[in-house]
Length: 300
Image (cartoon, rainbow, N blue to C red):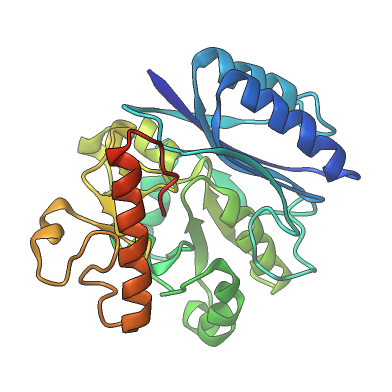
């Protein structure tokens, strides 16, 4: 069985280049695949592999400065959901573009999944989904506000434009695994918001811990690998990915006239130029040729 480990940890790394190569080599040795981001502010990523391979990687990461208490979340995958393994150096491990935001200084109040429903059902609590619009489109919590952001970097501007709506409200925030809320809650605290909460472990931990019969979650949770979505119990969902726009679609959407494999779907067909579509068609041709030769193609 393939195991998928999602992790993040904010800490201070002085020399991320020195961390990169040994971590890449260890993952390659065990056949792990996925992506890890390293920045001076910490580490973030999702990696799939065997029990042995993931245990070796996690043990190595916990020896890094400030990472001894690293937490991670696991879920199963029927097949390997990544094509390659890459350890990348970045400016931020989750890009918000706010240099004064520092989750190590202060974050919102953590709320355990078992206590989340009681919090968000209270009249003085507003619930904000900090994920991107295409993620929210396939699932979110009952009553949650969708900022309609295309990237996390748009969130501060959205807050400034809408903050007056939430006067005298307590703010509860959530995201896939928790990392975006580390920054968004710190940002709100810096803006003078006193009562800020966020779902500990994110949606993934909620779907793992809270039974479907007790859930206030509707739909599926988008994940950044080839499973595309997961549901309660972290079971793989029905969604697939349009490799033209990288948005989630359902199997029945492939029967729509706008769908052309690797070229367009009903969500993006009007967003592309003909030259883009021709380029995507050529890419699909190369993928098909590689498959016919029995070769592995990295795909889109």
